[in-house]
Amino acid sequence: MFFGKRFAFVSSVAVLALASSAVAASSGCSSSSTSDPGTGDAGADTSIAAGAAKQKGRIIDGVDKFGVAGATVTIAGKTAVTKEDGTYEIEIPRDVPYRMSVTEAEHWKLNEQEWIFKKDLFDRTDTSLLSISIGNLLVSFIGTRDMAKGVLLVKVNPLPPCDSEQGTKVALETPGASKVTYFASGRPDKAATSATKDEAFSALISDVDVGVPLKVVVDSPSCAQMPFPVDYQDVTYTGGQQVEAGMTVSYIRTFIGPKK
Image 1 (spheres, rainbow, N blue to C red):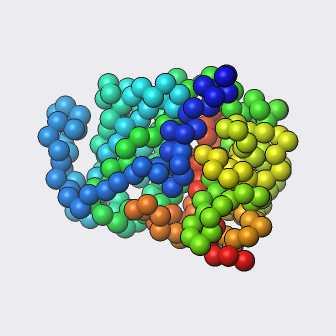
Image 2 (spheres, one colour):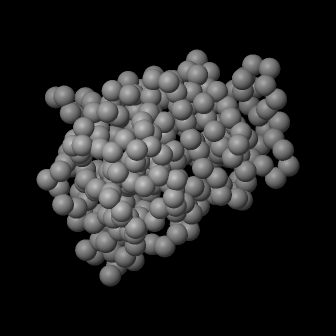
């Protein structure tokens, strides 16, 4: 089926770690800061400055799953370019907030939300990018879009004792002209009126004002929203995020936990 194939990226964009079953869920870490032989760029200095840490991972195409060569990973003013297999290593700040962005000519840019890492080695494993065609297909489901505004993907994560995000409403605290479209059956569905349980993404917010700090507000029928910062899967999420215009997707996880 067309949607099943084209939106297979949803299950692996596990970040798009970006905490969700889609972007960052498989992230792991180690207490060692020693560089592994052969994992850095040829001739690169893989030493880590005092007070910093190291992040390694792989950038992949969200649908076809191949490693994306030549992608630029940017964190806290430092950059790394992926090798032929999509792998990279980069120095990251430790114990202070940072964001990660990934760019490559044939894919939409990805902006991750802000988080804090407190150990020596962050093995982020796979981060998925949307090809230009798939990114355009994704936003086509929402109808017209203002290209001068941004796109924000939201994942509502239920944490114990909450066991489901079903029925959760998503909005920006300062919505402006933004529009919310919820996911159902692996794609944005304009007929859906709230989040569906176990979707890799909960909602897509389009026409978001660019360059301003965003606060996502969620309203679950049974669970309260957890305020940031939130510790989840080896990182501390601060809630910081903003969007860019054009072919860029920004990603944020929100969390619900205590029963109402």
